[in-house]
Amino acid sequence: MASVPDQTAAVADATARDAASSKQDINPWSVSGEVGEDGKVKAIDYRKLIDEFGTSSINEALLQRWEKVTGTRPHRFMRRGIFFSHRDLDMILDRYEKNEPFFLYTGRGPSSDSMHIGHTQVFDFVKWLQETLDVPLIVMLTDDEKYLFSEKRTVEEVMGYSRTNATDIIAAGFDPKKTFIFSDFAYVGGAFYKNIVRFAKRVTYNTAKAIFGFDGSSNIGKIHFASIQGATSFASSFPHIFGEDEKKTASIPCLIPCAIDQDPYFRLTRDCASGLKFAKPALIHMRFLDALQGPGSKMSASDDNSAIFLSDSAKQIKTKVNRYAFSGGRETLEEHREKGGNADVDVAYQYLTFFMEDDEELKKIKDDYTGGRLLTGELKAICIDYLQKYVGAFQERRSKVTDAVVDEFMSVRPLEWKGNPNVPRADLVVPVTKPADGVASADAAGAPGEMSKNQMKKLLKEQQTAAKKAAKAKEKEAAEAAGDDEA
Ligand code: TRP
Image 1 (tube, rainbow, N blue to C red):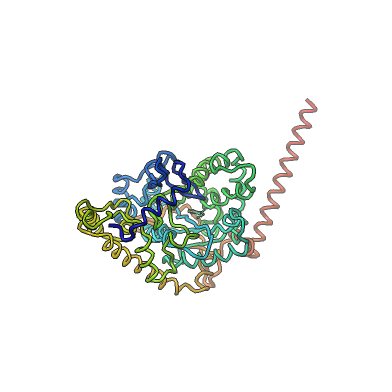
Image 2 (spheres, rainbow, N blue to C red):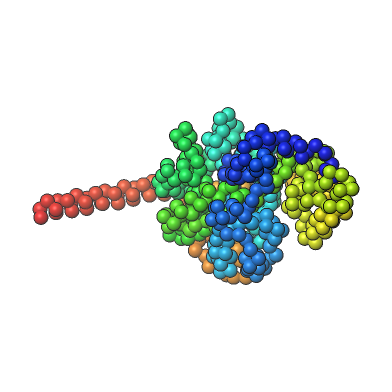
């Protein structure tokens, strides 16, 4: 009953090329499902990832606690196992309960101008989290990563993508008062760089090799990059938001919503955090939005037919879904009516689990499809309608994100948030406030390019104090050595 009869053959064809069976492989740079003896790619086994990565599953008890503590029904992504795994989410709930500060951190590697709907799912969820929890959000754009990990891209190119991707991300609807977006090329320096170097000192080449699979031919920038992605988890990297007193900021954790492939970075970060006496980041992990070709792969920006792009027209969306979306339907109408379709591998159905809010309606669709009452063409038509509306609404919001808006989100400035409205804020943070003229008053050491006179003075003073301390220590050592001589 597949609307495109030869699509199963096409998938089999593609997989036959590397017919050798292989295990599923999920890492920050590539994602592939297990290839079976028959040469076919299997759906990604997320349960197995929980075991392999040593994370915890998001279970019913945790969802119930979420609802009790936040007073908000868990997002459909949480209810449906799309965010399926976590590290220390309960700790974040503990803090929310007491209204102790924490922040949200997520990111994007700006590898091209063409973002697709697989990229925006995490951001849509983070927007909901920010609204629900009323906490600051930091979005990292790893233009340096995308330069280091590509043969061809130039520095100028990836910096351009940072800007256009920031525009797309802002279109998710974040609150500018609570959101800081930065590009590594622009923001690395100051307090952030201190944390990057502290991080780097704790990671040996052997550890980096074991976690990320580098070898002797990997450029050293790749090896070092983990320190940059990791150090963003520490509140003290953002003095313009959390203040400068590291004794206070050290205990402020973040919650990182991300796709599961980013977990290796943060496993390492959690280790380093302990050593540095910084709060460990908590995580909540998302599964991937399947490529149109089916489960076992994810949408790819470099393959036009694998993804629905945010710039696609309504007509392109319709054509792509009808032509490429892998179907769990049967070969013939009679067979489909009799035996029913398989929703678990059906891409149109999988997309609806992401986009359709109403649980009852979704369940009815599944029942009708597996019961043979709903046909592939009909299911695809429902999916197309949802996708067209989603992308249309995105384009509408995107058209309103001006250059000035992007500048605002990316400027080094204080943020404002309140957290849990029912509990007075047990604030450990020195509030960084904005005076009437709109310029940050805190002497935050932000990006070097943005350094005010005050910040510069402060940094020089810091250097002087450090120099004095070192001189004293040296004197003391010398005195002690002299004492030893005399003895
Ligand atoms: N490395 C990520 C990517 O290539 C970008 C990223 C940086 C990120 N920090 C993050 C993603 C935190 C999720 C959470 O897309």
